[in-house]
Length: 258
Image (tube, rainbow, N blue to C red; front, side, top):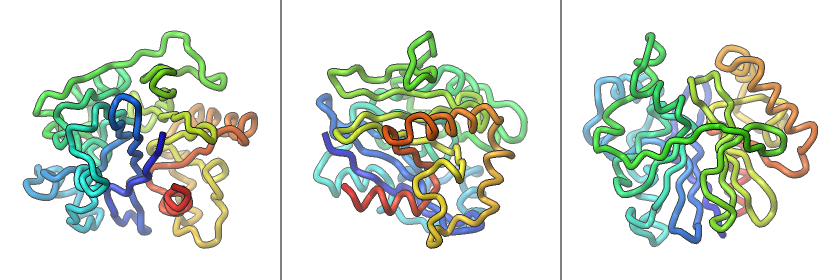
């Protein structure tokens, strides 16, 4: 099994940032973890997407879309059989229309929050045009399975390599990390969860993430999610590589190893 690390959206939120997605060559076709933005977000953006692109100074680079990168790797969009989402915020789900045949895996509470958004943050965080095509939803509950001591939901079973959703609620109602078993051990895509003392080489002096970026862990996440990540780091740090979706330094390190 091979994992490709893809940057599916460059943007500037105080500092240069990226949207880190994974493309996994599985036995049952390709598996995409998060999508970044899609072609329609650049060609025919919704009103909320236009605001997002302008506020975050997003270069309208269609070549960064997941579907364009899939094609450059020699595949067809139809080869993507599964999309696994950390959450449904617009910067993580924009590519869904580019893979209309894929099964889309997401936690049940996240699905419900996106279908019935509440409050200004809910309404501004989701873009319903991303699922107007009617995706083949696969909803996941957390019913007692454990992953390194944390609750989890099996997305794809052992015969297809282990892929699990790990609840890291708070940034959104059903926000999850996505754990992927590789030949060298587990990696955990933490979505928008960010804890500077947990992520891969967080004290690298070359990292563009300033010290205030660590404040996101207090403002965007309840303490429990950060406690979970710190517990994983303390008890299983040699077994799991964790990274945040928007950390360009971690992306550069991981992308260089594949």
